[in-house]
Image (tube, rainbow, N blue to C red; front, side):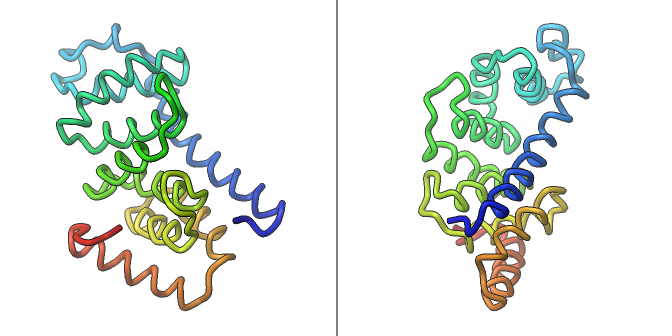
Length: 187
């Protein structure tokens, strides 16, 4: 629940920063998966998911990215799990499914994938696939900030406007405990 048009504009900017991080990778990896076979990628099949996903921002071939990343995500690859979450959250080649997006973001986040914490925070902030909860959003963005995710602090600042100082302090402790425990019991 946003309090003003100014908050909405700021958050969109924070969200845009989040999206541009992905887009900047796309520009750096402006190749197609076909031109970069597994052998060229150092024999690392997880790179195929990255390349197809990043390239999909240019080519709109989200189906190939979804197929490759889903296979890697099922095998437990955190980067692929995050990417499948993005595909579901945005309805790229699949029906939008916020519940599935949250599930995949959570799997990646609990492996320490910093950008997945950003995705979970966004889902909690807007109440997509979970109950709307700025405090939980702030908690996940706090972990992202501790993991040095560049856009995390921007999003924390926006959510903090809806929280008390005690809630902000609680979030910091929760995030540190969550990291120290290897995400045991962190929801």
